[in-house]
Image (tube, rainbow, N blue to C red; front, side):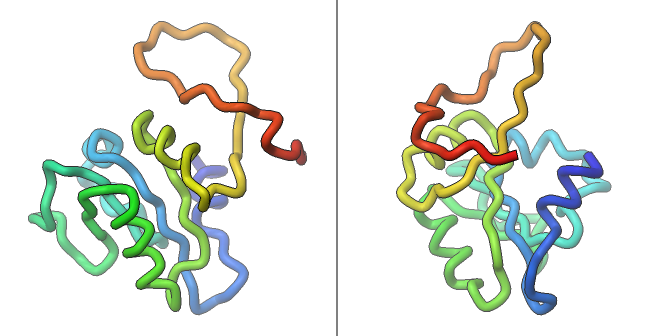
Length: 130
């Protein structure tokens, strides 16, 4: 988690911050004491959640992907990079978006019993850097 926090907090301009955009289930999986993720603007994509009890100036609730990107763009004086941090549906939308330009992909060479996976995509559309 240290690497994740370092990557999603790092900005080039000291007057900016990054946005972490996540789906409702990802948001709900974060323990309350760690919400919102500190040092970043938190965007939550959900048709079920409205601006609510978790409301503060570090959280934006959006109904759909385009609204979330517009919200980030409206905050452009503050937001440097938008990080998509899950879940599956949001990753799938991001992969189909014209705004996607970089994927940080880690392959774990082990089998796990699970029911949700990162969506398949054409890896050849991207340039491999290390």
